[in-house]
Length: 116
Image (tube, rainbow, N blue to C red):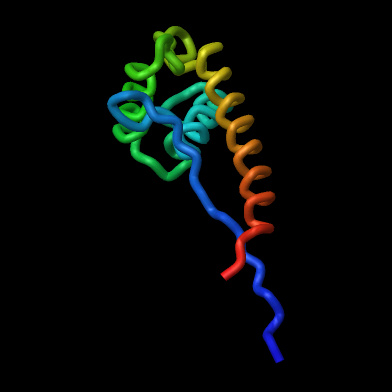
């Protein structure tokens, strides 16, 4: 008696690369979302249990690889400084999730045909 066929699925991580390296992946998208919700790179990093230095380096890297800055610093005033996710940053977040959704759908379809 043959065993019942096993079902397989495809796993992956989505990265959008620029000529010289990684541009955007899920971790960077989540950092952008945290900066957007907290108004701060420091607070956004803490949400992810990430150091400010690492978060700032990621922001600098994303900004340098993008045609337009994704995050801009806001200089201090009465309430102190902060950071905002720009319109370009918002667009990157949206595009990332759209691409991921399409890839998940395609991988589910491809998974149906995997047999060993």
